[in-house]
Image (cartoon, rainbow over all chains, first blue to last red; front, top):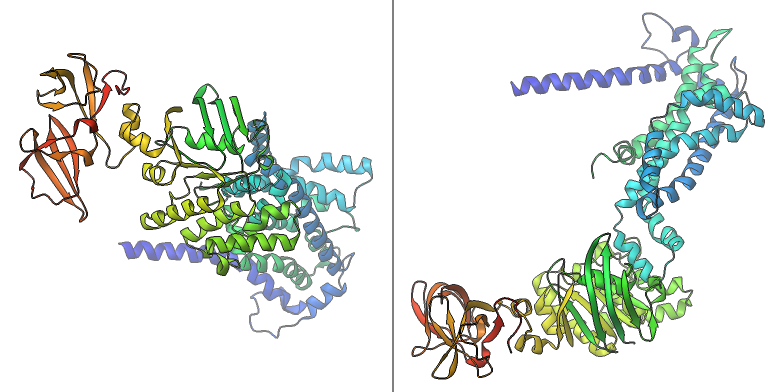
Length: 276
Length: 356
């Protein structure tokens, strides 16, 4: 009876895995196919792989408005910048919530927590109106600031949890050694917070890298990102499945590689606060 | 080096007062131990001296300075924590030199002072290691080295040996005492272990529920405890207490236990027939007295080699007696016990205060 349950459980897990992985594998295979067989039914499994789609994507030999390679660069810049801005704000905020005593602290902490539930889609029109009036559409700040703002509550709570795991006696020892609050943050907390910072940065970075709605609404060409660029492979000339798959693979690959290499940190970030 | 004055210090957490009007004078170079059970306020008091807790009322002076409102870094003190509180991401050398680096001390001087402290504590070969690579005793020495390097006016120790095994604790006790004899810096040491207090202190402060019960030299507290709490706290095994009343027999003061058995008291005992009292006799002060002793039925015998600990029923109560000699007693047998009158402590049954 137990072995039947185990078999059924394993069957369910493998099915889920196959369902999850299949689109990615299909995308990968399609990216290496010639255009004439990329949409063939039944699917062609035995074919001579080609790098042509990747060459076209990275050199701009596609029916899209921009060279995709440039959009990848934009995505890298926006991801790094928004993560950095988020960290600069999140670390001191997390430290204050974790260690300092001030009136209104509980209210501030709860308010920050509730903003995690705030759906970004609700704010895209107001942000567009603000950005238009300020002349900021299709500029770096119009993506960096909202991305940082939306990842900030999550980063603050993750880092707050990480800071609380640092024994407070270590900071007290530093106080007695002559450290100011800034010294403690710089010499003691930040080095010990590195794993937490990596986890928070990974999650915030992944969110910024994959973000589509704000990038589609607020950018045109100067700072267009890769997720928006992928959608342009479906145009008046039809859908270029081969180059689209290659573009999507190029976009997804860095996240996949980082997640595999740093999966422990990613899991830490996803499960933060679950256990005291 | 400096003296330390604690004057009428009070500490409250909200409406709860945990330290009640404590006053202690600590002379320059003195080794003072704050001892008491968990929750008595000794660590809170130490943290107020360090500046890690605010004082609700009263005054603390280090030397001539009132330090109530000074931050820890301005008080010229160093502290050794119970769980060492070493910086895990720094080497031993960096841990010890951190305070000096913050003061922008020249590197050469930092290296010299770290090397000197390392030599005193036997840490020369460990300077390049990280705390996670050290044993408990080594970490404790590094914590002490971090304090020594700063050459403070006062050393504060917060139960530094609690996390060590028994053997290491004995070794470190001696090392700390040797360090004090070498450096002659004022030390305030907190512990719940009265053996540490007795063996290390120039002066002991016994605390209970936020109140100072008695201050004095270790042997003074041992020989003349001022109340039941101090009498029962100092000494291991703990003092035995028996309830009864005062009486006289042929003009000599006598203690009469609840079961009617008698024990002779010293000449200083008050002449108050029938007064309810509690007497205290240390386990090591019982003597086997076949002629005048009261019977004690042995329950358990624990020979340790150098001494024999006997648990017995005596004058209606369970007591512990400690003998240097090996006695031929076994569970169930009866021996006759008494105590020299000058070794019998007398306390008022109601207030618990010593009656001299």
